[in-house]
Image (cartoon, rainbow, N blue to C red):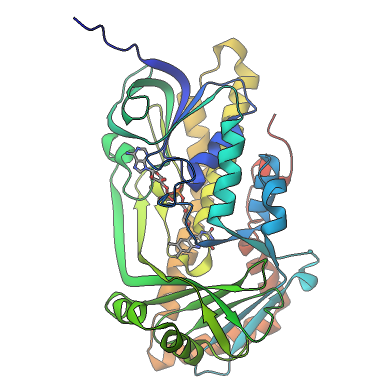
Length: 414
Ligand SMILES: Cc1cc2nc3c(=O)[nH]c(=O)nc-3n(C[C@H](O)[C@H](O)[C@H](O)COP(=O)(O)OP(=O)(O)OC[C@H]3O[C@@H](n4cnc5c(N)ncnc54)[C@H](O)[C@@H]3O)c2cc1C
């Protein structure tokens, strides 16, 4: 009879090697821990769901976290600084502006393509001696237990993994979350985000635009190579027609909705569509388990907060684990209730306010009713004039509000 393959024992198993899971692996790699990451997409695969052609707007807090985990210096030359943010409402004469100069910072944030960031995180993880990256591999079953959590892994290096802490970074439809019996509420916005890279006659000038239109918001973000990326939110039933247009017709529609701030729009790259919903996990921890990133909260991209929030999950979890190792030495246990409770308490406020902020924006600007549109316009003009309101908003969007983990303050983890 064939003897069963012995289980691989580790301190932390991260299920999902997307943007958030790999960031956590990179953050933990300096600590004395055995870490296993399991991800279905092959390395550098074009089909990796997290590391596609999307562009992510990173807050300054996120940039610091990426600096702290060693990823930023690898991607800095391919990141574009956001020096100004311009918000407008189509059909109204209202607008609001935010500038880095006014806030006394070199940039309000940066943009980076997911593919570039993914490659940097991959390289960091591949070089870490106590980190095992299993890909392409998938977790197919989860067995919670008092001393460890058992994972059944299929694909490359199949077998059983026993972890003292399992981290669910497996996205909005998280298998791990479900295995722990944690419910998630899902609100379908009935919208899709169409993304594409575009080029206009005029240089973007490092300005990020958010334009609200009756059909949905349009975000245009600057890229390091002089192009821009557009995230155009439309009703689900309007998306197929926009995707089917030829480039010239698509650009004409976009020009009409976005306006002329980039001059004449001349070129557009491949278009992709993403269905949009709000997924909110009821809890963020279970015995020997933590739920992070999209598995804990999947947000509408309207305010570009999803990854930024997930990265604060990462920085906080890495910090409470590092503190556990320092305070308890040989008796340290990354899955101990004291670690998980501290994590859950710390994350509650930030998570709640970012979910409310993002969902509130979708509802406020998705409402075509005339009185609301008028109030919205007045609010925007007022906002543009009120410096304290701008400063508060800027701190939230720069990822510098609330109690920040060490990495987000530029302080090393250990
Ligand atoms: C159009 C768009 C624009 C966005 N723009 C921004 C922005 O500007 N700024 C920002 O902060 N955020 C933005 N976001 C949000 C951001 O992309 C997400 O928050 C982020 O990608 C979440 O990463 P994640 O790793 O948690 O989840 P995911 O990217 O969903 O990754 C989950 C990973 O788990 C893996 N997995 C799934 N099941 C299993 C299993 N059984 N076993 C092992 N692995 C598994 C998957 O293969 C995947 O790699 C945007 C989102 C969209 C849709």
